[in-house]
Image (cartoon, one colour):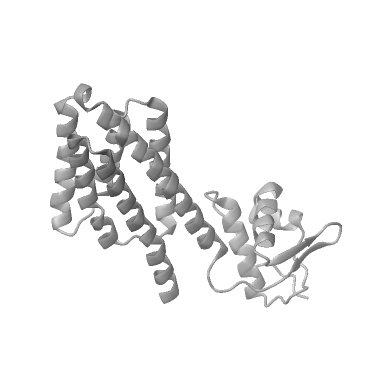
Length: 239
């Protein structure tokens, strides 16, 4: 049985328990552990990763749910199977990313419907701001450049114009949370550029009071965003 964990190094704190799960899985492979081999204790793992036992416990729960380890109360933690090449961390990031996209899309569809209801009281100035942001995105897009900052501002402004402060805060927090995922998930400029035309459909739909059209555009952007996950998997497979 191999229990040398010298290859383990401290882990950064973002999405910590998933990274710990990934590191333990890598430890199993790098040390050629076999089914039935015992892993270091929870206390030892916490010390090696310089983190809390709670984070290690969450990581072990993830691995047990994946069927990679078997935790036996009073005995210890044992290898149950060897993980394939894809990482636990990346797999869970992709799942969480898709779940967040689904929620964000529904929130934004509702926000846009409120903007449509309020479009008369909102006034022309707000629509000029949206138009200005979108025109800049379109001009950059023609040069093959996706302006992520402008995209954020466009969605921030839409949520603000809904007139629902709670909804606005929820959408903004979700948009900010995606930055953490984009550090992990490779981005396809082409896929991002493909969303610009649907921003135009949303803005035109708001002006025309067509909630069905704006909802359809939001769904199309969701489909494109989901393709990023497929793109990420292809990129990982090519490495």
